[in-house]
Length: 83
Image 1 (cartoon, rainbow, N blue to C red):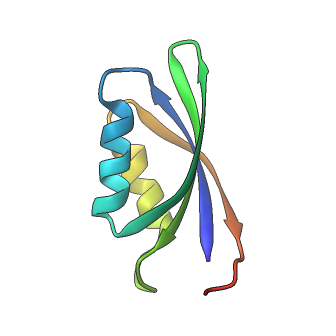
Image 2 (image 1 turned 45 degrees about the vertical axis):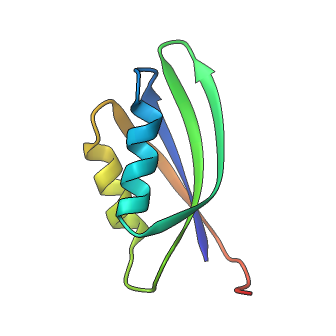
């Protein structure tokens, strides 16, 4: 199963790299990323899936909320067939 997390993040140097590093360190694979610049910030739709069943996207979302310059806007769960 994949989950799309909608995020608003500052357009500061290294902000996208910090976000991607956080997601990977928390045990998630990034399946897709859509990004749009909107003034001083970026709006990102990040599609992720966990490496194992013990990982929670809710937990990941709370970690993103704590990341400097970032805040989660919402989540969309997408059912997908495992290969």
